[in-house]
Length: 192
Image 1 (cartoon, helix red, strand yellow):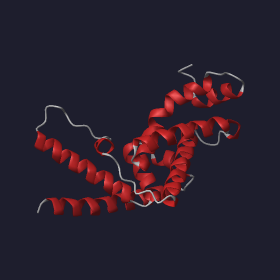
Image 2 (cartoon, helix red, strand yellow):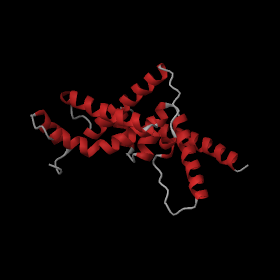
Image 3 (cartoon, helix red, strand yellow):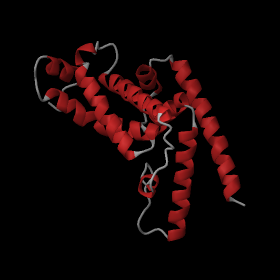
Image 4 (cartoon, one colour):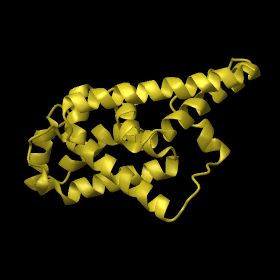
């Protein structure tokens, strides 16, 4: 079953194969979680958004038309879940404060043999990048997370976001420019 395409697994699931959708979940849950974490910045929120993504996909399996790849369809559902969570958080006026463990968790890892000073510097850089990415407007954050952290192609991002390829490239350029500006400001402030 593991060599069967995602699209074939959807067909099998629709035909009543109880294990087929589980294969899709296993194939994509890490990437969907990484996308959700990149957009939401909190492990608990990312786990919830990932679970909600697969529940929504399962409920709407008959709605999958095959016009895009299953991966693009799942990414689109995940992005919608993240946006919905962000809107709810704004309505509830959550502050978004995170505990120390969540701030230190992330994309970058530090070797155990490094000095405490290097670890502190790396944590500070990681936190600066996380803050800079989180401060981007949603439409820019989506593209930067998908391209730089998820390593999706421009075409995959365009399909997942249902945007023209030129818009995706433009948003990535703008996001990278804003990140360079924000991180340049951080580096200048840290050098004082």
